[in-house]
Amino acid sequence: MLGFLVRHGGVVAAVLGLAPPALAVAALAAGWAAGWLAVGLAAGVVLFALVKSYVELIRVVTDMLLPK
Image (tube, rainbow, N blue to C red):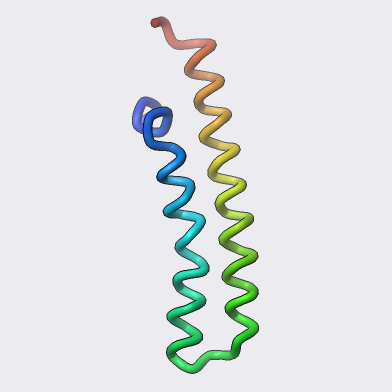
């Protein structure tokens, strides 16, 4: 799992960061209030930043601790 996140962590962070805005756009298309679009965009930015920082932490830890 660590190897997968080291190699593909950027893609994972991007996909997870795009999920809340995509759900917000779908909710807007279903007739929900436009305020949910702003909430979805903010949640996407926060989720992307959290996952990206987690991936970077994993990269540092694996670089320092795992033998090469």
